[in-house]
Length: 117
Length: 115
Image 1: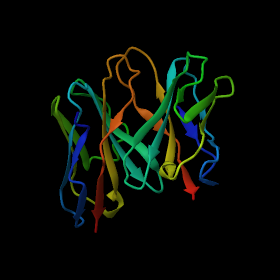
Image 2: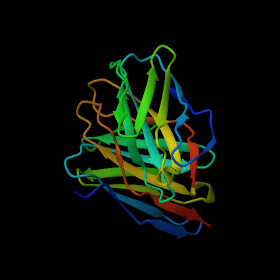
Image 3: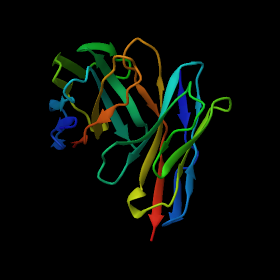
Image 4: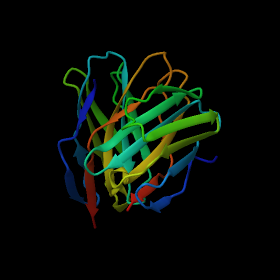
């Protein structure tokens, strides 16, 4: 079974600073995908970024980027130039790959990020 | 385009009552997932369907929970009888799951409170 661990329950930074959220996972699969989802107070689950395990290049989406270390099974999220709207719970998630159709997401416990003005 | 639509957004009911949560996936998506979010257990999968067929229901807590997907555009999650420990936020998500690598899109969730 796969597990996802987020070791930082809460983080707080000042607006415009850079912040990095940690995530580690455990799996014996060789083909998989990793995701970061954001859950603001409105409760929506919003996809932030995703990474295919077979790609060495780290994914980037505007101010959001990941540091994917496959051997270490680490998948951290970096938010640059943080904004007040980035305040949310952030969940790291794992999904097994393959050609058998859709697979379930396995989530970490989340990191509550607060951006202070 | 419309996202995943869940109803109701909030549900408050008394213990022992039947509860039905509804979900309309994104049009064209062929995979549908039901997740539950609680403070104690975080986000966990209850059940998911590919092409309307249940694939993995190992997360369904007990026989009081049942889920159906009668067609590609509708799914229900039913709890009968409900108990206070079922109080949680229930999310439905859908994806174009043909290749197993597509992200899941979530609805806004149903906050369920069992008194």
